[in-house]
Image 1 (cartoon, rainbow over the protein chains, first blue to last red):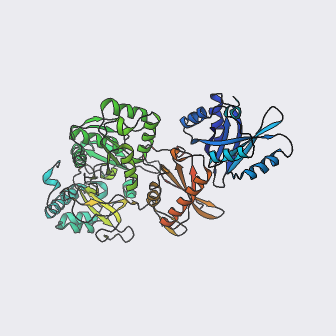
Image 2 (cartoon, rainbow over the protein chains, first blue to last red):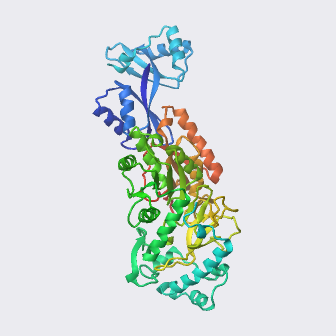
Image 3 (tube, each protein chain N blue to C red):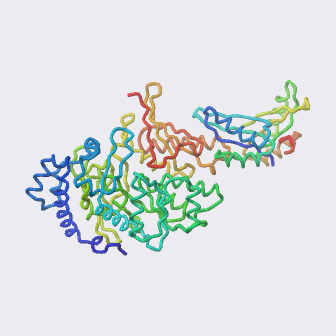
Length: 143
Length: 432
């Protein structure tokens, strides 16, 4: 199972840095970042990191509200139209996600697309059925 | 089971007779103070005598302002040589209020405290940890002397330093602890951070909570967290401090010790007594204090008498938990709001932590009530829509309770500053 770390954050100066300071101290690498803010002064920071379990543990120990949230990550090509091609396949698979973000990979030809969705097992099945490649944990975390 | 059976179960008519007797004694003592020496109604009452307890209504009220204006010695009714201790408010704004005690007063106070704790089931076999601040705040020494008189093994831990509190509890097998309710949520968090469960890893069976108004929901939450009975304690430094009124093991209202105080409940606007059972402002007169008697003190605390007799057999009347303070009430968008109403809503929600703040702000020339609420860590699953729904839900509940639509702000756990003394909940930043 693949996880992102989700952190509840108030929109205040220095709050994002509190998170990154903890990760830096533990030498945890951030692979991808997505910040989701509401009009009510708070939001959720989603991180794909090299060691999500450790990051989750450390952030909670530092008094922050962090959660491990399961995601599914699929491969796409890193060229114009790559995302559109991928989304056409996702539409075919009938998968409706609540949140998504991406990341390029340093092989120069591919990128990863992170999908945050309620029913992960069903999404995995549907995405596989249309022939999409689901990325293994160690590749997502870049270990 | 009583600490002083005869006085605690005294027939009402005999209790009132005792009150009248002690009131006359108190007036005769009070008149020696510079302040009460100037009050003609007191001189008159001493001359003509008082036969009925209701006649106390002919005497003027004493307010906190009066105590401040005649600071420091205006209310001292005995020779300074006999006074052995003072307690005082912090006085960060203007003069503090100081209260003086001689040896008799301290003994009488300790006895009320011991009587209160005994009524809540505390015995000389208990180990009592007092987590209140020692010093000018009465919650430290006030409990200390009572606990010693009762005969418990006392641990004068003082406030704060949660790791040390937990260590003391475990080292000495603390069975009873006293703290302000807002601190206990913090202490519980530290238990959890240490991988401990107070229900299993301590011998606690009773908590005493006071010095801060709190709701029944808050009490239930504390009982659940620690797996104990939590008893409500009421006091104010002008009336000694803790030990003024206390819950017995029935946990149904606080017996106020009427051999030591005359208790009235008045309408804070008309200043007339409210109908029996109605909420109003508590007014108190000391009956057993020599160094500094205080007559008809307006406490600003809002409460009511609970009707009927208590199953425990004590005849001293019961006060309902404090519903707020008459000076805590604020008016926003034309509605009168008591912070305790908002607390009542928040404490019913399991997702919400014990700490909250109410900020009154002027935003675009409109007065707004912002309520900052901490979401408990266990409830956070990284789900934006859950938090969104929670925020809307709280907004509705508060709106239904106080008739003003609040701006609910969800904040990170632990981000609301903790107070060591009484928690300050309301911050008024409105442009006047």
